Image (cartoon, rainbow over all chains, first blue to last red; front, side):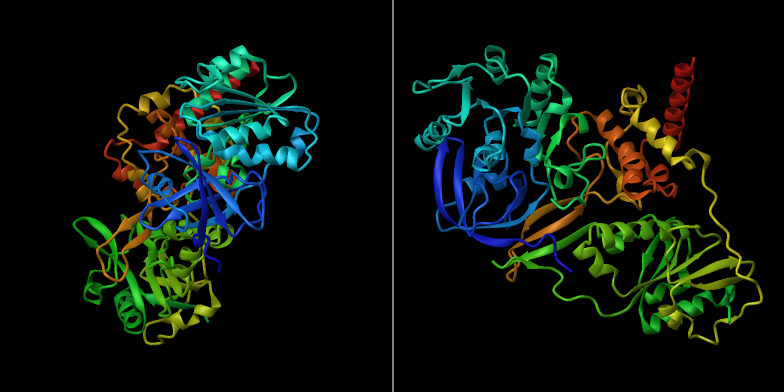
Length: 259
Length: 317
């Protein structure tokens, strides 16, 4: 019988600083997964955490955006890892995102800070997999300082996606909007006939969902990325359940109307 | 040939089994029933409902699932070979274990649960059974001053290889089934009522006495929430380990206690029912007995059902 909790070792071949609070780690080997699925990463002695890949499926590399979180021992440790260090992971788990839902629709990704790590793969997959969407938008609140790698990432994506970025604590080099995510949505229009995908801390979901519903967007068109709620990853710990839905089995991207 | 065990031979049977197998049996100490494998306590055999449900054998409250020496070695390395018997398991706990087996052996295919469950034989003891989901290897059904030996698993017929202890049964095998409490008798209606009850004031009222301690989850035979945590150790052979630890339906992502309490009921009577066809309750009464706040879940269900019935009558008018 397969041990669902058994991890495999992966080596970190490169680390790129994206912001003061986010690093992109590259692992080898790569893996075949469906965009939307997640992995459970762990460092023995520090625990496990669920993260969605930041790269699209590839045989040669697997990337994750690691957030800096001082109240989490494991993420603190992962943030301090160096090139050549080992990390363990198991997965992929969950269901891949159904890109057919985006056919002939506009897509608005709404993310706050580390939430981008959970949807970066989805954003890139949209145009790499030739999904027949109409237009892509990214509404993003970033409160940490951007690094040159992140600026490059945004610049290369601008031809595919309308990027609207805001910060509540902008530094001198920041050229985006000032204010919260909520202010950003107030100032800029979410295109009609949009599928919305939210990614960020749980307290952001309630606030932004309520705003979207007031704007007349249907609950069936709002999706929440719930990978950060996941615990065992295999559906048996009962920790992440929302009524009859388990993000680790049925998601982790679930419709607002389902939960 | 049907066999029966005279009441007076029960402890002798246990002694005979203990000489050949590892046997866990219930004893009473300090007013509580616990399972033990200590052969010196056979004379204190006390069949009944133990404080700790049988899930503790197969989903231990604290289990090391990995030791680390840079190879992420799983624990256990070898499967247990010695046949083990759980003796005089209460019918309610047999029912719960059957449902857990369905979940952890078939649905989740849990590596650790299946390891613990292998080579374990269940000998039940009681006055009634259940008409569905009642899997044990041998059931000793109370019948006056004897126990009717009902062999459910033919491969476990070695459990009856004690001719000096068993006698020929003169009674026909008569099954007595557990009577279901009317409150729990309509799981479909119960699920609907709870789904519609989110805004009920009962959950806010319960948040007053409820301590959020989780004892109801720990003592529940069907509650299987767990945490996975890493531990440091100064042991030379393995410095870190990863453990699976019992948790509670209260330890989920909800912020407010009233939402956590609602989640407890939702998980038991809606989610569990939707996923398995059973409610997540066998009516053993442990959560009521051991609740420090003296909360009785049946009172809560009765209130919810009454509110549901009233809302349906209003709609019809």
